[in-house]
Amino acid sequence: MKKYVLSIALVCISLISYGQSNYEKVMSEKIAKLEMCKTTEDYQMLANDFERIGKKETTQWLPSYYAAFAQIQKGRIQMRDGKMEGLSAYSEAAFKYLDQAESSAGKDNAEIHLLKKMAYSLSMMENPQQKYMTDGVKAAEELKIAEQLDSNNPRIALIKAEDMYFTPEQYGGSKTKGIELFKEALNKFNTYKPKSSIDPSWGRGEAEYFISQAGK
Image (cartoon, rainbow, N blue to C red; front, side, top):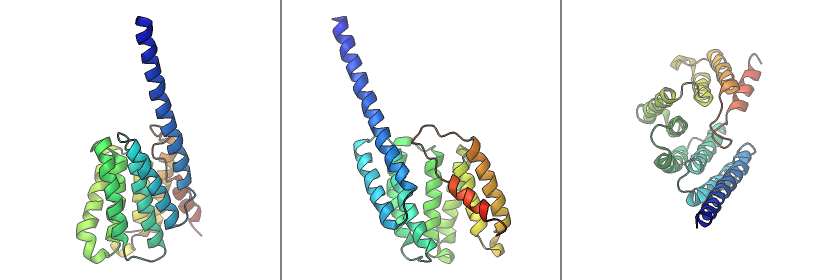
C-alpha cells in the first residue's frame, strides 16, 4: 500500500514538473520574439499569445506582464513615429493586463510598478500639457514605488535615464546627464540577476545603444 501511495505521489510530482517546464519553454520562446518585434502588429500578435498563456496559467503573473509590455511597446513605436493620438488606448490595454498580473504577483512587485509608470507616461504623452498633473504625477509615483521595492533593478535605472535624456532642458532634462544614467543602468545590468530564466530581462540593448551614440 505504501509503495502504491508513493508511486501515485511520484506521478503527480512528475506531471507538475512537466507542466511547469512546458510553461517555461513556451514562455521562453515568446519572450525571445519580443526582441525581434518591429511593428505594432508584431507586438499585438505576441500580446495575444501571452494572453492565451495567461488564461491557462491563471496563477502566473508573467504572461499578463508581458502582454502589458507588448501593449506599451506598441504605443512607444507610435510615439517614435510622431503619432501621439490614441496613446491612451495602449495605456488602458496595458493596465488591463497589469491588474491581472498584480492579482497573481501581489502589490509589492517592482517590475509591475515600473510598467505602470511606463503606461501612465505613455498616456500623458497624448497631451502632456493637459495630462501632466494627472498621468504625469501618477507615473512619478509608480516609479518611486518601484525604486523603493528594488533599487538595484536596471530597468528602473533605464527608464530614469530615458526620462532625463528625452525631457527638454527647460524642464530639467539633459542629454549629457541622461547618458550618465544610461551608463549607471548598464552597470546594474552587468550585476543584476533575474529570479528565473523567464523573469524580465529587457533593456540592456537600449542602454548600450544610447551610450554608443554619445558624442556623435
